[in-house]
Image 1 (cartoon, rainbow, N blue to C red):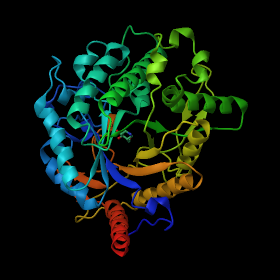
Image 2 (tube, protein in one colour; image 1 turned 180 degrees about the vertical axis):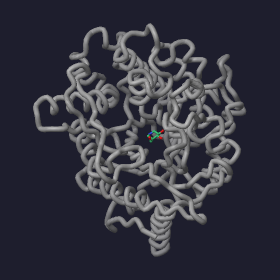
Image 3 (cartoon, helix red, strand yellow; image 1 turned 120 degrees about the horizontal axis):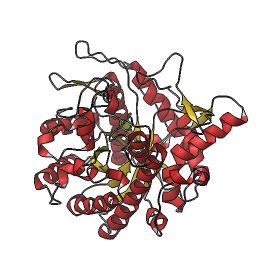
Image 4 (cartoon, rainbow, N blue to C red; image 1 turned 60 degrees about the vertical axis):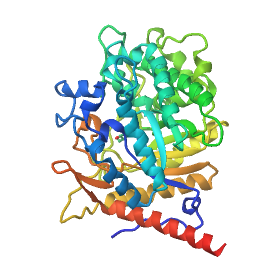
Length: 463
Ligand code: IFM
C-alpha cells in the first residue's frame, strides 16, 4: 500500500499543525423529517438538475449513524473534524429554535471532545431553508439579518465547545453557481434582473451576512474558550489559455471575479476594481455602511482548493473557462494541479498584508473507486494528498502562515448537481447498505497521523 511521506523537518510534521477531515450537513446527514426543507431539497425535485436524479433524503444517514461515524473519525487519528450545521435543523420556519436539531450538534461536539477531537464548525454550507428562499433567498437583504440571528443561537449553544466557527463555506458557489450560472440551487430567479446582477446581489448579501454574523459572534464569544472566527473560501489560480493580451486580461478578470470578490471586501472593505467595469445594471445594490460591516477582523481564513482554471477571452461575458483535457483528469473532469495550491497561497499572501492564518479546509479528489473484497485501492487519491501536502509545505517554506489541513471528504457523499456519481471520500460508502470501508487513502493518512502522534508522545516522554 502506498504511503504519504512528508519532509521530516516540515511544519506539517509538528504536533501543532492540525489535521482533520471535513463534511457538510446536506451532503451526509439525511433525515429530512427532522429539519425544515432547504433549497437543495427543492432543487433536487426539479427535472434535469441532478445527474442521477438523486436527493439528500438519506445521503449517508449520518443523523442515525453519527456515533459510528465519530468512531470512524477517531480511528483515523485526526486532530479535528470540520462539519457544517443545517440552518433548517436549528431554526424552524416560525423562528423558534428546534431543540432536537440543536441537541444533535451539541451531542456530536461533546462526543468528539471526549475523544480529544476538535470541532470546526461551518454555519452555512449552502442549505438555505426553503422558508427563506420563499422570501427571496440571498437576493433579499433580510436573509443576511436572519443569518446573524441563527449565528447567535449557535454561538450560545456551541460557542465555548468548538475550536472554530466559519460563517460561510464558498459563497462563490452559493452566489455564482446558484444564481448566475444556475447549476446549483436555487437557480436563477425570474424577474430579478440579469443573471450577473443576481449573482452579484446574492454575493453582496452573503458578504453582509458574514459581516453581521461575525460582529455578533465576536461580541458574544470572548475569553479563554472563545473559538477562532473566520470564513471558508474556494480559490483556483486563473491561467490564460494563450499569451495573448485578450486571454491574459480574461484570466485577470476571472481572478478578480472568482477569487477576490469575497476575500477583498472582507479584508479591505472594497470590491476588486472590476466592480466598476460591470454595467451599472449588473452591479449589486450596496447600502451605506455595508462595506464596513463586511470588513470584520478574521482569526483565520479557510482555503478550499481542488484545481486551477484556464480562461480565454469572451466578448459577451469578459471571460469563459476552458474545460481541462488530457490524461489524468479526475472523474469531475478536473486537472490535478498541485502547484496551483502553492501559487494561490503565495498570491494571497503577497497581496494582503492583513491576511490571517490559513487552514486548508478542503482538499481532495473524486476518483472511480471500486470496493473489492473490503479493499478500495485509490492510488490516485494517495498521490493527490501527497502532492498537495508537499504544495502546502512549499507555501509554508515561502512564508505563508498555514496552521492546518482538512481532507475532503471523510466519506463519499451527495456531490450536489453530480448526485452520488462522484466519490470524494477517504471512506467508501455503499449506499445500499450504508456500510463504510476505509479506502487505502484513509489508511495512508491514518498512518501519517498516528505516526505523528506517537512521535509527539515519545518527545513528551523524553522531556
Ligand atoms: O463537495 C464539495 C463541497 O461541498 C464544497 N467544496 C467542493 C467539494 C467538491 O466539489
